[in-house]
Length: 373
Ligand code: ADP
Ligand code: MG
Image (cartoon, rainbow, N blue to C red; front, side, top):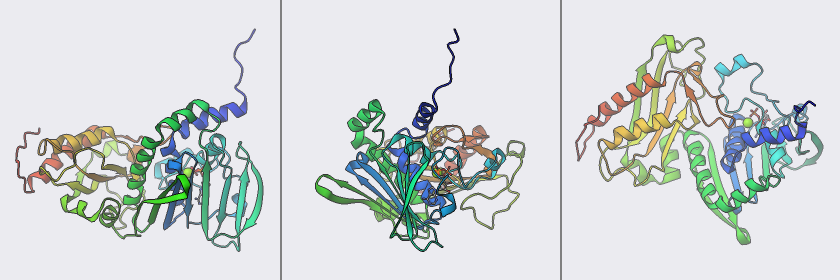
């Protein structure tokens, strides 16, 4: 008797969705990325009970056109990518059309309110768990989109229990992630709040549509943080054989950039390599690839190692955006897109370590001890 049978469609959807939305951070990340992809200049994130009850993201971006109402929450339906080849010139955060459909499958979220720029009124959209549009109604709304994710993992009892147990820690993690999006997003006003018991709302942090990342950092971490920072402005030439093909300019790249450039730039801010100017813990470290917040363990290790050779007792504040050709890395390596594969990471790490030593040597150090390399 045959033992191999296809998994029933609804269960496949639930299994796959659980890989896209793995925790509270995934929800915040996907919704904030959608807001930024929609060109929002204001992003409000509201948590209820640290996110355990709900997470709501409201933006003033493009809104969703009525023609797209039927399809936005269907799996692999996206306005951002049509073919695999488009991946190499990607300038949006999203591209797989999985977030909204996964959120439909894993939470009691089934409602979006939206109003496109040419829409006379707002529309409330209600979806089924499968992502199919269930119904619409006209509501008053400003331009933009509001998505509410209610009771995450309500239908995955093990995950829900784990979330309940770890919610305070998860909330801190999600704030760190949102700090990264708020700091890198120039010209965008972020505001993040949490409402806990008895309806008491507290502001977690906010930014002011600042024109540069320095002011964003000051808003998020306090103006005093800036006094310990020096600018990062590194550039290396990479071996062209490792960076083939497209030269599409990526998100936030300067328009003056040489379109044929195979160089990698790392720009941002880092603590001065001086004892007293670093951090007790490595909790303020943000790495980006073409403005996309991501985890790059090897790059992070390189930064920390070099820094520690100057200031062994502390960890640096790091805000570093690695700017490179969109063809020189792959975002499509993990279902939650937090990992990025850099094609020429070994050379990048070597260059980075050397450049950091050079940078730190050029600054006053109360404890000079560069034994690195
Ligand atoms: P992806 O971001 O990969 O396209 P999503 O499931 O996150 O997939 O979103 C599906 C589509 O819904 C997007 O491509 C976009 O067209 C639309 N959309 C989602 N969120 C928003 C938003 N906040 N504003 C405008 N459009 C949105
Ligand atoms: Mg998305």
